[in-house]
Image 1: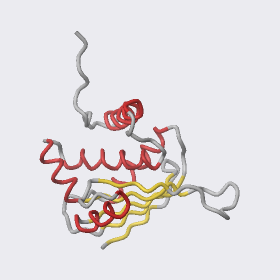
Image 2: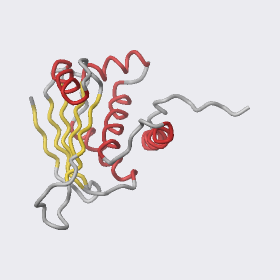
Image 3: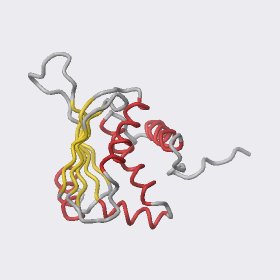
Image 4: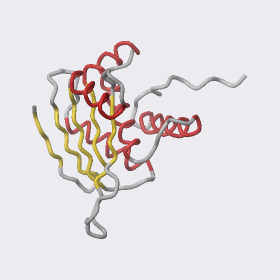
Length: 171
């Protein structure tokens, strides 16, 4: 396992801790992961600073987390755990945004199945997970349209195709 802690820079207001607990070779480097988190926070309109921890895991660990927190006994691609309020934190202190867990094997396999590049699908999963930390959701259709639209905008502005495919053409 490798841990990389990136310090915020003038351009990056988010501190990202990337922990890799998987030997999967498809995992992007910590700088790329951090960049996608920062881009998402900046584009969201819901914050500009905070701490995010990202843990990249294997299927067994992801299945355990998905079972424990979502009552689904199977691995999934990404889980987000927003930090919420912290009692005793000094006024004005930066709030942590939360934690994201990504299953490397699931993301790699989904990219192949969907005919996407691994890097593009990884970017999508990081954007998706970060938006969940920022309070976006896709449980209701209207919320899904908002979240997917923002995901698409963030990705396409940085050269990645719409992960949901092209919108239907009006006739």
